[in-house]
Image 1 (cartoon, rainbow, N blue to C red):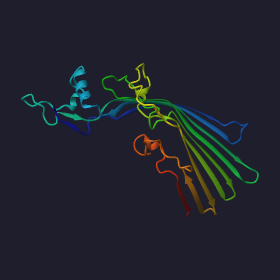
Image 2: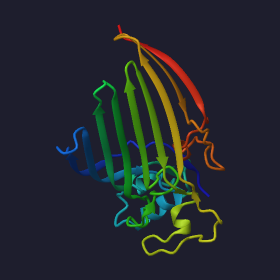
Image 3: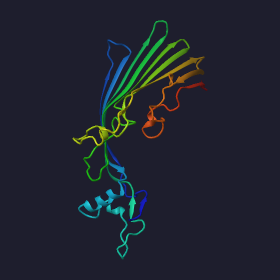
Image 4: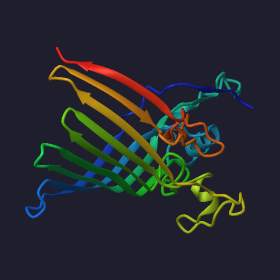
Length: 269
């Protein structure tokens, strides 16, 4: 056995991102007040910093054409007697991983002013993700670990914001939608890159259900300096899915405090 020290790595180089985006803005003359924005994104991050397991560091060190590589640099040379020194291996981040992400963003907005001075505002924001993969296997750089549709990364999520202003009062309603996500790692119950599911019989329920959250806010403008507002978040007291608390990695995408009330004032000087 040998000791292992987890630490930083001064030899790291910056991560590199290549981003491609294509956008379309649509403002039809026949539909006054309406605007639609659609953006496609394709992001690839290379030289991603990740920390391989100690065994992976050892394996990659001896599998490289020369010992002058970033993996062997994490090993401490043996002493004159051929024994491991303390620590024998430094478990630190190295530049080997990659991450890819593709998807489409939607932003739809509509505003209408009525003859009596009232105003209607509508806005819908949504993201449909097509791909989100991590490549963090130093033994096989083409081996994908799917992140999309796992906890914290739904395929589809959206928000609808509506507001109606009547004189000094504005009533706003927001609907937030989160699509289904897998309870376990995607590869456990689905095939990926031709690989069969790792554990297809892991459980009966494989996905967290889709979730809707509702928010209501009432605001009044006394004059150009004073505003007062009241609101209710998570109006129907929707709790996180069973087994989650709404905190921590991934699970924080859900509301974690249930229904809540707030109020306040804004003063402009």
